[in-house]
Length: 161
Image 1 (cartoon, rainbow, N blue to C red):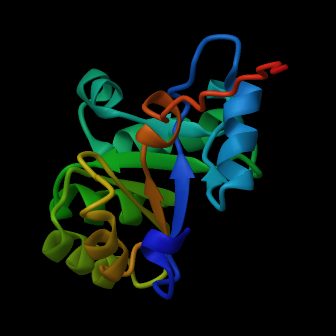
Image 2 (cartoon, helix red, strand yellow):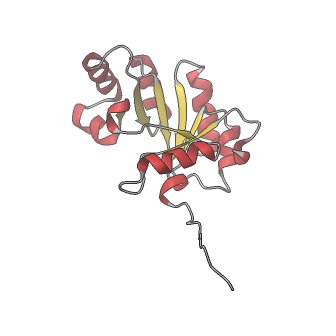
Image 3 (cartoon, rainbow, N blue to C red):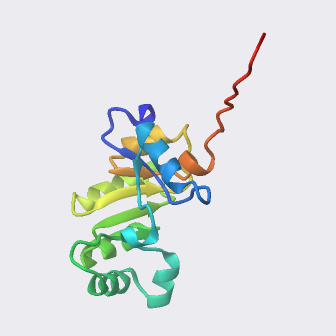
C-alpha cells in the first residue's frame, strides 16, 4: 500500500467484515495491496485482554494456548504494555499485537522483540497516522477500516437514447 511504502510493514485487515461478504471483502483487500490477517477464529490463537483476565497473566495464557494446539498453530497475544510484551516473549508467543501504542512505544517494542516474534500494531490507526506507525519498524499494521469503513462504489448502468 502506498501509505506505508518503503517501510517494510504490511497492512492487514481484521475479521471485522460485513456479514456474508467476508470472502469478497478480504479479496478486495488483497487486490488493493493489503494482506489478510485471520479469516476466521480457528486460523490461529489470538489471546486478548479477557483471556488474560481469566487466567491471570500473559505468560500463563501463552503457555496454556501452546499446550492446547499443534506445533503449526500460531499463538499471538495482545499486549498493552512493554512489560506484558516481555512476558509474552519469554513465554514463547509467535506474534504480539501491540495494542494502542504510540509510534515511540512501538519502536521500543520492536527493539525489545529483536525479531523473536512478529510485531503487529493495532488500535487507533488512521490513514493520516499509518506512516508514522510503519516507520516504527513493526511487521504488520492491522486496520479494521479497510473493510468495515470502506466507501461504497456507486456503479450504475444507464441507457440513453
